[in-house]
Every structure is written in C-alpha cells, then in structure tokens.
Length: 197
Image (tube, rainbow, N blue to C red; front, side, top):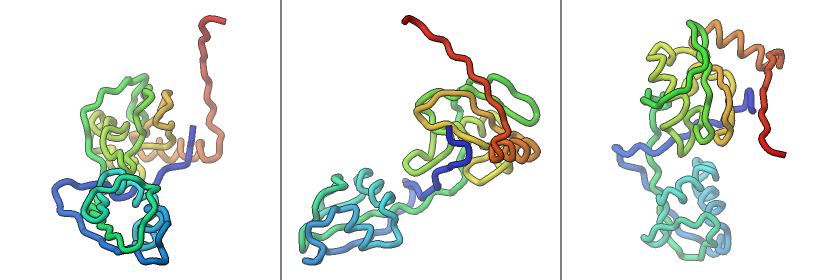
C-alpha cells in the first residue's frame, strides 16, 4: 500500500474540443533516436510520459499515418504531427459505480476496493475510479474535502490490489487520519485464510 504517494494528474483527452496540433520534421542529427525521446525533446512542454500516452492513444502521425510504436526509430526528413487534446477539468465527476460499503458514519466511509479499480483519476484513467463512485454515493459535499481530484482520499491501494479503503467525509477526519498515516501511528490488522497445503 502507498499511504502518501499519489500520481500527478495530467491533462486527459477532452473529446468535444479540437486538439492543438504540433508538427516537426526529423533533422539528420536526430535520426535513429527513439520516437518518444525525439518528440519529448522537440516539444519540451510535453513530458515523455505524456508523449508516450499520446502515441499509444493514436494521436501521433508519421507522414500522415498513425504511429503507435513508442520505440520506433525516427528517420531524417520524416514529418511528425501530434494532436494534443485540451485538458479536462481537474475536478472528477460523480459516477454510479457500485460500492461494497463496510462502515459509514458522518466522518468516514470504509469500502472494500476490488482489484482493477483505480483509487483516483490519473492520466488515461479519468473515469471509473473509486473517487467517481464515492462522489456519487456521498454527493457534492465531498468535493470540498481534501485535494482537488482526490476528495476524501487519505491513502490508497494500487489499482490491481484489493483491500479496505477509508474515505474521509469531513475535514476533521481527513486532518486526523492524514496525520496518522503520515506519522505512521495508525495501526492495521489483517486476517488471512489459507486453503489447501
């Protein structure tokens, strides 16, 4: 479990707005470089991870043809065009996603997070997260608890990990539990069942 590490939220595709176009021609000096490295050097405002996401999302064109191979070697004289979508609003939206609620009161919501569910929105995964589900369950009042994009989230589990998550519904709970996670004074107890030999 990662208690205080959160992935940075980056701009994600916004389908209704026209993307900006970035274009570059490969110089002889750059020939042979990996595509993601070449484009991140050509467009320093875009991180290499953002470039990789755009390539994999079929938003990079080589001489007018979609290029989806991040590690392709660039050739001198080749023309590349990138479609960079405008950023989505940083505020996640409520979604009607079922929750397995273990406990709830005025200050906290304790849920059993299944494997495969991301905790909060991140690049390439803006919807369908635990945050989206909790916003639907708790309502708009949760949006003001904690950081933008991660309302009520005081710790997290990796997407592929199942387990119990505590979501704070009040600033009091967020401050108190946040301190405990940060100081590592919170205690946890786990039960495990084994089957077979």
